[in-house]
Length: 503
Image (cartoon, rainbow, N blue to C red):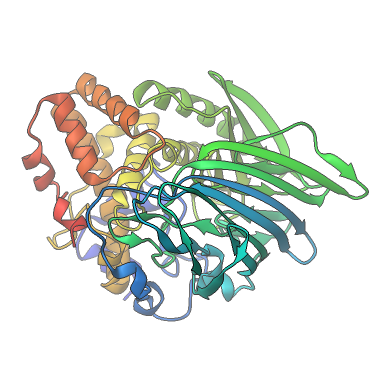
């Protein structure tokens, strides 16, 4: 059944077009994976296997054992040191990585997990993947196994409350394709490209399957020190700040980046990039664009600066010294990483839509970047909030009027797996509920509390959860405590249920 027909059975089609495609009267939303692949002409091709097989991978048994409820997340304070070389002809990265962290989990650790998102089927079928070698834990060789997008380390014991380190060599094959991880023409997009330490929480180790229609990402804030060697002609946008000028060695340049209190590290490269910059308070905003994308550069810079100022006022001050807004050709609207957002420019792009995409992705700097969440288990906590943020920037909050789907089994607080279990229909429902109805719910809450109290409560939410990880329970608690209101009826009426995270 086609994408259009399956949605039209349950919702108003014009509303879906406005939210998913940024068409109709007010383009208030766009986001990476905002267009459903294989259901919209020209969309990026996703894995060939049925949705139920590609997204309903069984977790490793070690991850399904639920530990005693502790409310502890770890390992904390990861510090990544990477030294990598990008070969632009082979589209390959070779490098070393050392990750230091503290075992705060109140128990000795005999295993660790990393997520290898580059091994997802959608990337492998286009020549991508991550290979890991020479893994050591605290200087000693460790046993390890790669299974799909997870790296499982064993054969050691890390004492509770002690610091530890993991070292490895790794090779990344960058897939051909216009995606958040891939290369196309002269542009290289490096999102989710390296082994990243998984999170251990009340569920155990989180190594959920890659979700090509949205995000599966869940990581704790840490520090990155990254050295990148590549062609000296490359212009690079990256998470963090470049330290000094690149060192030129023959035809190669050595770049050094440092980032503090971020959940991930992304890069975008293109030797034909131009750069325009401006200031949003104390934050430098850089826009990267090619000659073909130049007509959108001023709009991207204006939206980048103005949305950062607006969100800093309404939600809490942007904490990092730099933000890169990067143009690229992709099948999606945009994609967020700490201090870097990818904005897809196509032949159908308009200035207003591009500005709205930038505003949405910059909303994610707060909701995912500063205030983290488990994007697989509670996707509404970042996508609904970023969609609301874009409407706030666009001045179109009154257009957030989507009704919930008629099927009451679709909740705003549902996990990704609750949607994908129902195949294509469920993925369509994911977009409608998590983006469209989720933004409407937040706007309803704003109207319920009044602007002054709503934004005061949002600032309290920001202050408590800054650089941490939030949950639906946290958000409801903070909204109730700061407003002095019992909001249980409001959230139940909007299908936000704490029980969705208790199974």
